[in-house]
Image (cartoon, rainbow, N blue to C red; front, side, top):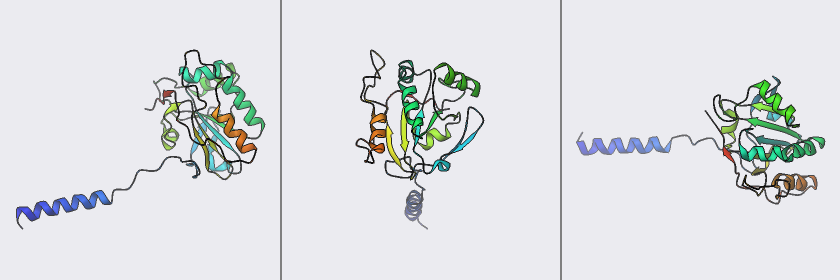
Length: 206
């Protein structure tokens, strides 16, 4: 075999290898089934998303040390949304994907203390220190929101509102995308703005 044929053969093998590389797993998309997951909450209870089929589920990526998240809790905005939605039978899962030693990481007891001191009202706080759920959803910021409707598909994903600032921001006066999405769903209408660009602190993965 000549050197030229050897090189050609190697090149062909490389091309075949590229052709048969498996594509990366797709993240969430509006109108598509939400990626299923199982996670443990701060009370030691296990939650599997598919177990909530038939209910509307809100996923909130959170980091109590992030100023973009803190502004919503300091103003009582996030707590109000949690109480409004869960009163209507919605399942609200706050998810902490911060790794140990990184900003926003909490133990189960610390998560429970935060829920109490901030008068937060999620259905549960899921602890995701390995970032498994966060990466499954391509969660990139805190806060970042997802709404999953009873058939298991994603109806909204993105920012909580249109105020991507911490200086002088008033979440109570902002255009709240999550509240608008929930109102559309309650009225039996498609979400008018199903996807927005999330803002905030980067999720502090391992």
